[in-house]
Amino acid sequence: MTTKRRVFSGIQPTGNIHLGNYLGAVKNWVAGQEKKINYFCIVDLHSLTVSQDPDDLRFQTRSLAAMLLACGIDPDKSALFIQSHVRAHAEGCWLLNCVTPLGWLQRMTQYKDKAAKQESVLAGLLDYPVLMAGDILFYDADEVPVGEDQKQHVELTRDIAQRFNSLYGRDFFVIPKPIIPEIGARVMGLDDPTVKMSKSLADKRGHAIRLLDEPKEIMRSFKRAVTDSGREIIFSRAPEKAGVNNLLGIYKAATGEDETAVLADFADARGYGDLKVRVAEAVIEILNPIRQRYHQLMDDPAELDRLLARGAEQAAAVANPKVDAMKEMMGLVLPR
Image 1: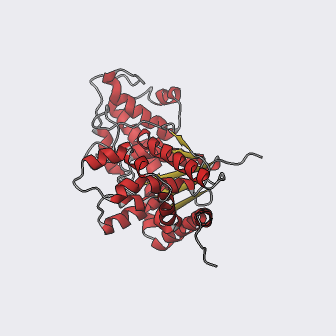
Image 2: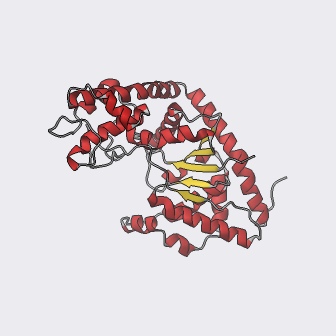
Image 3: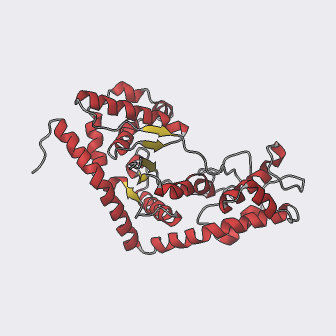
C-alpha cells in the first residue's frame, strides 16, 4: 500500500484573487486533493512582516478562506486553516531560531533585496524564512509547491531540518523538496496580452477578471480585450496573435477541452467579437457558482468559523505534537 505524499502550501491573504490565479493554480489544487495529503495554510503571521491595517487583514484573511472553499478546497479531503490558529507555528519558530545560524538568514536573496529598499528593517523580515521552515517541517511535508522566487527558502528549510536532525541525533524532520508546479494555464492581461495577469494590477480596469466580478463586468472586460486587426481564430505563437492566443487559452482552461475541440467550437465564429463573447460566457459559467458560494460563506460567519476551526484542529493534531516533541528533545520541561 502506497502512502500518500504530504504537501504544504502557504497562501498570503493579500486579496485580489483573479482568473489567472484560479486557472493557473487553485483549480489544480482542487483537482489534486485525491492524490495527496494537502495542508493549505493562510499565512497571516507572515503578513505582519509589513505594515497592515488590522481590520483589512482580518477581512482579507476570512475572504481568502471563503474563496478557497468556494473554489472547491474540500475540508473532507484537505486541511484549510489560518496559521495563527495553530500554536505550533509561533512556538516552533522560536525553537528553530535557536538552531539557525544568523548568516544563513542574512544570505537570503529576498531579505537582501527588500532590506535594501527599507530605511528601518524589522526583525520579522529577517526571520520570515524560519517561520516558513516551521510551516513546512511541522507537517512532515514531502513537497512544497513554490515559485522560483521562494525556492531558496525551501532550500534553507532543508538546511535547518538537516541541522536539527544532526544536532539531536535522529531523523526527526522529513527533508522536503521544492516543487515548481506545472501552470494549469498562463493567463495574460486582457489589456496587454504580453504581460501576465497580475494581482498588483487586478484593480486596473480591463486588465484582469476578478473572481468576484459580476457577469456584466466580466463580459464588458472581455469585449475590451486587446486582439489584432485580423479575423483568424487559431492558436499561434506569432506576437501579433498574442491576444487571440490568450483568449483561446482561457477558454481551453475554463472548459477543459483540448486545442482541437476548442478550435472546433469557434469554427462558425464571425470574427473576434464572437470569440470574446463566447470566452466570456465560458468564464461566467465557471465563476458563477464560486461567487455564489463565496457570498454564502461570508454571509454566514458561524459556518465559515466552523470550517476554519475544523481545519485548525486537523492541522494542530499534526503540528502541535511535533513541536512538543521538539521541546522535549531540546531539554524543555513539558507540562503534565
